[in-house]
Length: 309
Image (cartoon, rainbow, N blue to C red; front, side, top):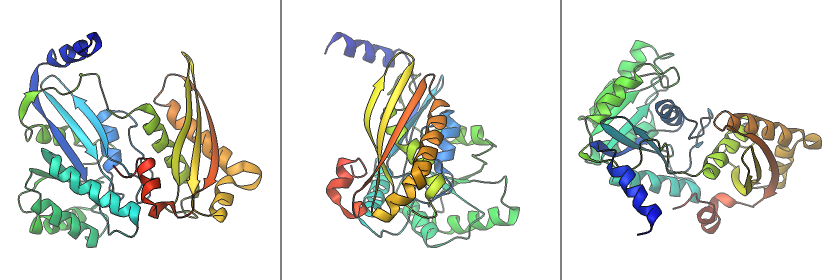
């Protein structure tokens, strides 16, 4: 092993031991999974647009303190598969459940218990891992709504522990984290204490740009935008990013570009502001739009762009 590798190993070993493990964050779409992990880490790791299927990949977020290290894996929302991309997302959820030490299921009491909740509760009951059920959005949910979703989930996932939180406001999130820590095995830290994620900045930037685009054009183009960073040029004070927004039709491209380029410029500005909130450098974000017909059903395209592992 080279000198650099030896230094990394020593750094991790010197962080001692504690409750350490992988925790999959699961739930139906748009229940607040990404908001929770961003809140827990204090970092904009995942897209948080108020849209279904915002999260498409498995993201790892690392939360360390003196006696524990939780490696969160943020997964896509649980839903029925309708195309190749959604099938890949479902496979990603199943893989995360299998490989995790514990499972955190986040649910939204303000929405009635539906087919996706039934699928999720059934998966929890069968996964064989410690499960924590987090009833989110208590800042807007009524007591009756909270009790209804709790009882319906526990009818199926009987052994789940229950917590009640607001990921948006941070209410009782520390208490929930304490419960999760207690479910993890003892062992050495797997990452340095100051590491927040094993995801590179380019991947995070792709999610943030897609979040900015979703907020602008989701009503016209639901779920049909994929972002790929083309170039990333970084100096001590500045980062220049060029990225492509892939859509499926010419009409979608016209919407994303907008009249005289107004929409794509607006998306670029919004993305730059979001990225600068987490980076201490000036950013220059240039975007272009490309038609990649029916990309959600093309396995090679999905694999090449990281949607399929």
